[in-house]
Image 1 (cartoon, rainbow, N blue to C red):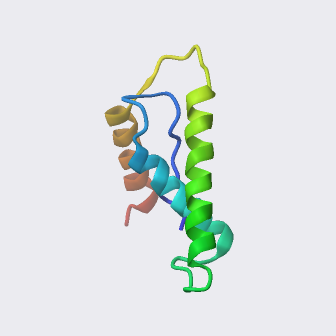
Image 2: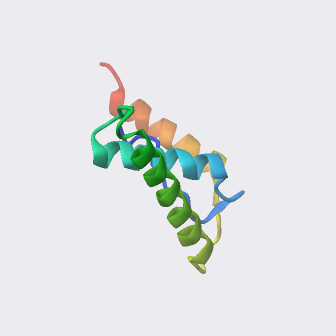
Length: 90
C-alpha cells in the first residue's frame, strides 16, 4: 500500500506537487486502513491528505543539505535494477 511513498528530498528537479500529494494519499491510506473511505469518513480523509501534503511541502522547503542533488533517472534505474534482482525468477 505504501509503494508510492518515496524519498522526495534533494532531487533535481525537485519533487512535484503531484508526487507530494501521492505520498500524502498513500500515508493517510496506510494509517487509516482505507483505500477509499466511506461517505461518512470522506471529508476527514480528504482533510488529512491535504494537511499531510501541506506539512510535507513545508518540510521539503525547510530541509537543507550540503550533498549534491540526486539524479532522478539514475535513482530510477537503480530501483529498477533492485526490483529485477529482488523479483527475479530462477
